[in-house]
Image (tube, rainbow, N blue to C red; front, side, top):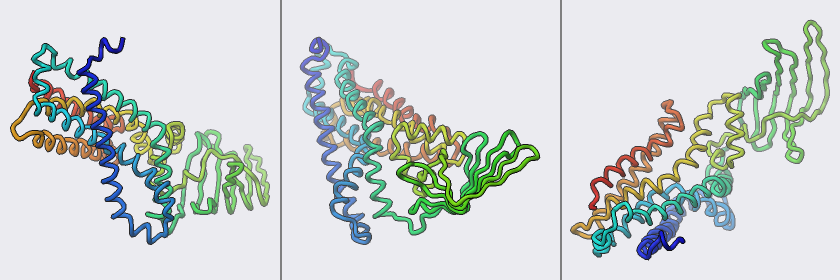
Length: 363
């Protein structure tokens, strides 16, 4: 049944497309690793990073991250390169002259685009967060370690009626100092807990209060209790006090959605970052369709000088696409642009450009 819809020429284009795409990914992997080693070598030596961790932790996370980031560029270059080569060898003209419409000619391209889209989406949702965790843990320890990893004067709302305050939190020791927890009923304070220290128990995944006092208020009645140690379960984890900006890239979708729901209550100012991270995992893989449309439309015409001109235009436009992603991200973080709008802007603008180029392409 499949062969009725995917003819010999379709298989030829699909193999050319995917083969060129994955070969280009291998070339880019080698290039980015070489450049990164030359840039980070001093940091590796300065912080005495073990060779095994450099290879199996840092670069095991670094390569998937940058290939995912550069996949629009790689995809665009791959499409333009082999399509322009087909046009230069006069392979496209006989196909179109044989009665195949240009839209039908695009069919195997979009079959290949869907394969790349699906692979990229799976990587974005399930694999990249795991490999990012490897890279981020290494970077935060051996490349950009913070000499002062304490977070000061943290106010946080846990739910509609519960607020906490920590004067100083040590991210290395997972210990907070001068802790207070306030519970309200409407506008009235009903309970206040204070402790000299709050310590994270990683085995039980709960908090230990040390040298604490609990004040309970029931209308005009008040009661006080004291103790040296008490274990409590709070809807907050040590990661909520992290100073590093890159931790959200390592969250899986469940963690990301949970953090977004918590942020709706807490309002700590990171909602845009969380939403951008969530939306881009779903939206950016769509670039495989947009850039394929542009690439085929640009390179299907035979031009004097071979594949150099369309390849050069393709590289310029793919870098422009990545630049648009960075600009829209900054407008969302700094300019108040809604994250969902920001992630759709690059694909929308280049999609319109792709349909314009398709209208101008030789039929």
